[in-house]
Image (cartoon, rainbow, N blue to C red):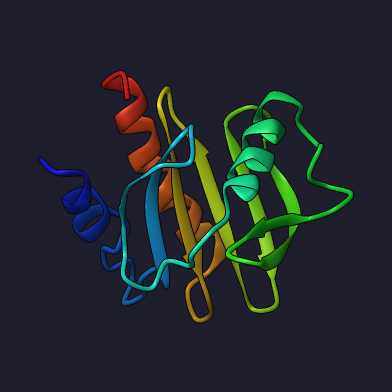
Length: 131
């Protein structure tokens, strides 16, 4: 299965009539493996800061999480495994696997819990496969 298929069929799947606004699979080095057309154009330093937060949990809390120039307030995640952010009526979930970051961005009416379920489920699956 191609990486794009994982984005199109697993991250952008329908959950109770809702879908993620944007999604991507990005290597730890910041290289995009696959992404939805609506995924924001991000800067390498944004991915570097996210990777740092996985190594030093809480490092993004004082400044916020930035992706595509948008700032998300960091909310409870799982240190070293999941970063969650909130912005207005939407937010972001980032799951770290062995080799990649699984990223989902949502907006109402989708909930943070629905986004977490979609992103973390795929992340756990890929992690178990060694990715």
